[in-house]
Image (cartoon, rainbow, N blue to C red; front, side):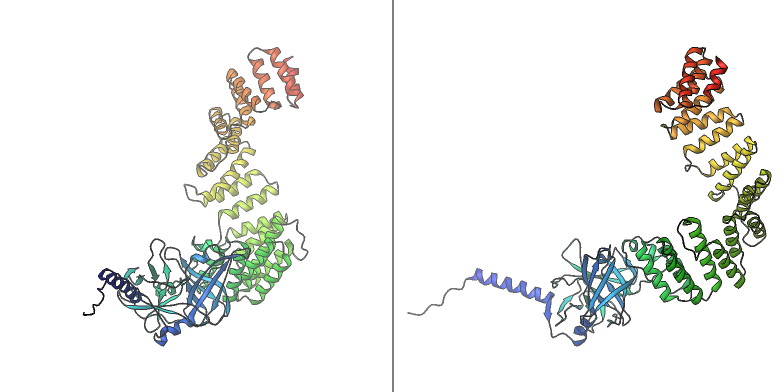
Length: 568
């Protein structure tokens, strides 16, 4: 009998072949290998781990990235920097390097370009984009032996007309996000990014990230505001100065770091030192501020600007922190620094600061002369006439002289008046009201109202109503006090004022009704009882009215006793 071979299980063979096909397909997509070309494996020298920390020093996030030159320039994903106060990288040799600033970031593509302190091994950028179907390699971080994973480009999209956006289907090692993707020559194409919505991986063109440039406005970007690591200082001086000014909106730690970066890049400009000095003044560390400004005067090329900045800093300290003793600083020292600036490089701006300091010293006549002199300089502006007018007020000069100066200030504005003109209009209105020029004053109050539309509180309408009453403009006065009441319905003063005005124009019943509302808001308001008592008397209820006047007297109203004597 012939030996029979076992019948093959066709179904099992098909399954085995299917599994084998899947495995081969996966291997074709992603093949870990240590036999890749040397340039590919050499890319591992440029990889680093990134760790970011919160303000309290606790861990925030971690990722990887790649250096792009030998001077500390690095690229990575943005997410770990969101909310970070500090960041550290560890390079392929295990060396720890501090992140000192960020060039720029893009939240949409989740990329960031930043700088670390120290020498680095940079990876050369690929001279051309990879195409769909090209072989590319993922090189992962390791202090021992890097792992290289081969894959193919599934799809390439173009953005901003010249940059590539790669999509890959691959099996990536764990925690490989941020590790570089290179071509066969070991040149950088991008770094691995995980899709938020699919299992695909992608990569933003490394060329796009390295092309990021810092401008004066970069630090003001909403994304950059969300990290507490400072923004790089632009190379252009004017852009750098703009960046320093905008950075003053950051928290003190970030702003202080920005000031240090500015000094490092522009040691001969006073701006960085003065920024540090201002922070020190804010913290009441006047000795440190003094040291910073003396350094600025020593090192700055423009000595006049350094002296001027120092004078202004002392002046502001004496103006707003006069209760904090620091004997080395006073208004005389501020004048000395302003004069020193002017002696080096005569400028109206420096004379203007001296005039302001002298006004604060109550040297009103000398300050007035300086302000008037400056109205003939190239900085002639409304503020100078306004400041001269304030000097006249303090010297108790005739109000007509003050108004004339305010007229000169207003003449320098084009109509319709801008918001900047508002303080001058209001000041002139008050002067005219004091002079008894009530209708002219009301015209200025109206102009102020027009300029400040939507920015005025109830107290303004009450003030204008008072002036209108003096000018016998009763209809306008009633309208204004009604506006004040609408804006502050729980203020009894305005209701009492309206009732008084109604009584004055013979609206007796209305006055009584209004004053009752004032008393309901404040049952101890003596002025309201005075008006109520007078309303009742004028309505023929003398006895009841006198009783209410006595109540007003008991509550401390000084007019009540006279009214009681009059109507008894």
